[in-house]
Length: 134
Image (tube, rainbow, N blue to C red; front, top):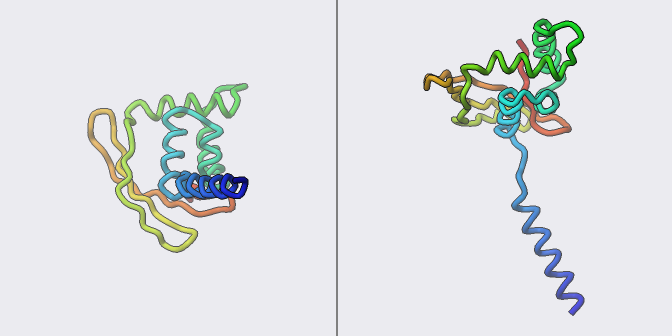
């Protein structure tokens, strides 16, 4: 009986691990845009490469008020910038190799118009991250 219970437990573990969410290029892009839409600075930092973080953070900090924390500044920045933003739709993912991909998205505005954008992502030790150079 003991062997049967252990076997059942192992099978259930394998089933749950197989069904767990896998991080991929699409999830990195969704996380990036989610952080933008909610103003979540910590999520933003986790969703981008260090190079992308430095680039965006420098631009964001230029808009800060005196004595404002980076978290407060990011919330204010995203509040202004997202006023027309509605949602994103992932169109397709083009894997370049095991560590690089481009995610084609539609960025919808609140008025219903959209623009198509390609978001580059890279696979790091922490998982997939948005990688914008300029």
